[in-house]
Image (cartoon, rainbow, N blue to C red; front, side, top):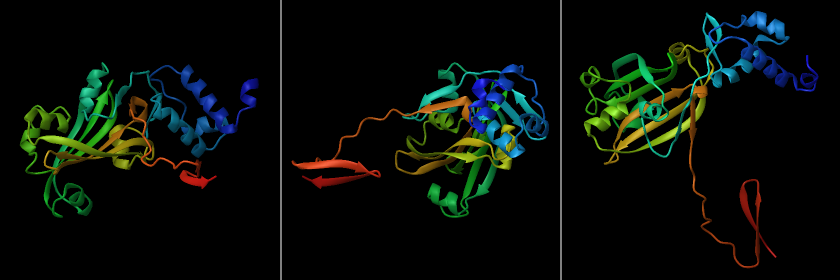
Amino acid sequence: MSPNESVLHPYQRLQTQLASLIAATPAGARLPAEPELAHQLGVSRATLREAMRSFEGQGLIRRRQGVGTFVVSQTDVIESGLEVLESLETLAHKSGLRVKMGDLHITSTLADSTQAEALQVEQDAPLIQVARVIHADNRPVAYLTDLLPNDVLSSDELQAGFTGSVLDLLLKRGSPGLANSLTEIQAVAASGEIARALEIQRGDVLLHFLARLSDINGRVVDYSHSYFLPGFFRFHVVRRVGIPSVQPAAGTQVSLSGGLVESAAN
């Protein structure tokens, strides 16, 4: 152990040791099995798995259920602002990267209560579900699902020439006219189904976009879930500086306390 490592917090020291091990391992090579590596580093398997998740999130390693953990070659990331809605294919093209669609599943289903509320349809209304995996550099990096009413998109339209983007398909068709997307963004743990599709471990952290795409008449025409491996995407938002709507009266001192604005007269 180096003198610098000796002054680190135990978890920081573990991160440093893992970073050194990953850097010294050729791309494509497999790291030691978890029990062996945990013993080698003097930590529990649970602590090791938690530390390794951060490196997977950076795209430095790839864990495959029942196979092992592999060091991956460095790749460019898809970087974009979120002010304009664009497909993953469009974003990749702007970044100079190539993406392609992997497994595609098109199914007919009936709206449950959550889906019916999101799409503003009756419960048990017929829907079409489009689920697919998107690959970059021959590895899965995103898992996308879209739910649409049958009168918006049919399975026949998805059989010929569909490359992975429902948004691009609707834009190319020109109808319905699209207006905006209300999107919620959060970090989630990968379910078993999504973990298998993305060849990661169940419980690994993913970036999740939950979106409702509306047409120019305000109708929600697409309810989608998009799951991204954090290490391969970098999103940002440009925000303008807000102007307070209420100006303090003369002779009033304004201070911030606990996130709330309080006024105190002199």
